[in-house]
Length: 351
Image: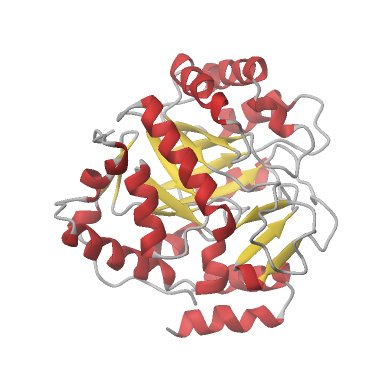
């Protein structure tokens, strides 16, 4: 596929420059376009949202809502934009993205660089009448004195402009942000979010570095504050022994296949404890249909990817979807929803 070749050719540039070229290409209409409708087996309902397929784009790719429609046209079932913060910020100093080619992984320490809420809101308003499932990842400014107020400000302004929202408390690159995962701080945050949210579903995005014993408390907090689901998971600050790249020591969050096992283990744990009705989106190390299917069987209603695109190109989306159909047929499932959590001996509801 020509777009996959172009994606690989961009590796001659440093990662952030290559990514910028990719965004510009999408804005210019040069990205791939899906011609045929998705197979009916892939239709997915999660938290009341009807998706044509369960393969989504994770936050971080389109930080400023520049190309959501081009990304949807490429075949994603849903696209998560951002993270957006109230005020524009540069993020951490460059270089801040590192390809670990031998591990098919990436380390980033971006720090939520974005153009801020005003620019983000204006772009969402311009596409308000267009179709497609678009979500927003909410963040906090690096120098914020009140992180909870940042989330509230973003959600209050955008709550009628997207189909879902993600409260991202799991980035390792904003100092102290992960402290909001602690029980008391999480309650304070979700109480504030509940007071300003609109009708769109709200998800909580967590880190893969939480302890297993933290999971029941998070599930209780999600239920207590009326959130709609969980996204498992963000990048990790840990460095698995399997890493071989000389860049493995760079600071930041690690993504890609090295975090697949832990993130999938957490998906399975959330599903087993919460039961069939919690909406779960699985993220981490998805670079093939096998990986996506494993996440779904572990309990994910839908999946998201990003790092896989860096190494496999945009054609990965179509390959995952066609592969999922083949695996569902081989296992005797009539739809993707029948496979959700099957390895936990649970059947998911339709959201």
